[in-house]
Length: 219
Image (cartoon, rainbow, N blue to C red):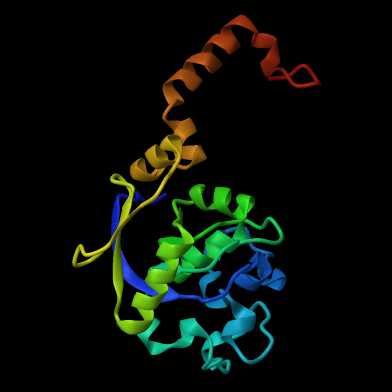
């Protein structure tokens, strides 16, 4: 997965609490496990005026002009600002996949549902918990200043404005931080031990050669 160190990006504000995973990516789009291709259907029921199904040409679907992400000022946003309990509902890995595939690298909220929060780190997508007062202030800044950007510094564990006038520290588990900074998912962590794995397999075959035999007695 891609490394996450310092990210500067446009902020999109989704002023809704208790956004559940079915709203993030509706159930009819969960048939694929490729982790990609979900971005066009992110927030599908809010984003479009018609009912979406897999295989539809989204470029021809009517957009909901009242939905935040359809506003021109948020085009190209890579940081999502949300309210409390973001990612609640069913435990679907596709929710962070869809956010990441859309182009977001991080989401900031006062709180997250536990399973969604954990799933984010598995793909290098950073969920940031800030106090509600800080989130309120950021919502005000986004509304007041089109093109509002933030810098997320994972190493320093700090969210700050581009001009440096505001800075908000955040907590992150040290192991998860290490994985994100080094671009290591669970498979990547395992592969770092590939030499030891090969040594174990060679020793096992030497000490227990019968394990290579099939039920029919053939290797």
